[in-house]
Image: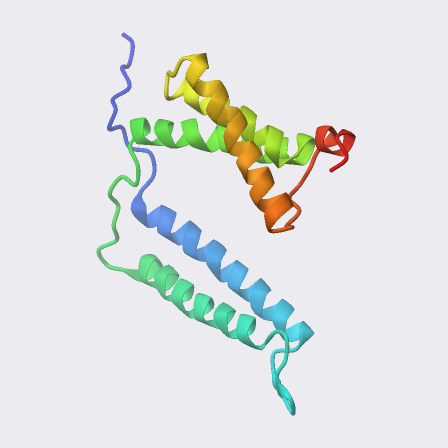
Length: 168
């Protein structure tokens, strides 16, 4: 007899997610604090050193994350409710996986052509738009971003071999 997967099947508890995320933030806060202490997080004769404010931001992160971690580790009535249902998790993955691909494409071919591919894919796959509506947006949005960042603001964004071949 086949087991039918329900849309509300248990995935992971809210408590588990909060423990993992707050633990990761504790680690991140410690790294931030260590690195900023290393470069100088004290008050010098001429004012704060370069790492002064980031160090204290890290300290605030550490206190908040440690509090969340401790509450979830030692709470008598831990929240063991389902963090996300499988159908919701599937929707998150439908955005997360292509976005990770977009980030990889930025590294490979540059941000502008990667954005054109990303916009085209999303409009076709999730939006179900016809190609005559997709192409103008997929071309004009990266072009507008190029003009705004590269030409007007003079802020270089990651470029790939195509932009390099065109002299940018």
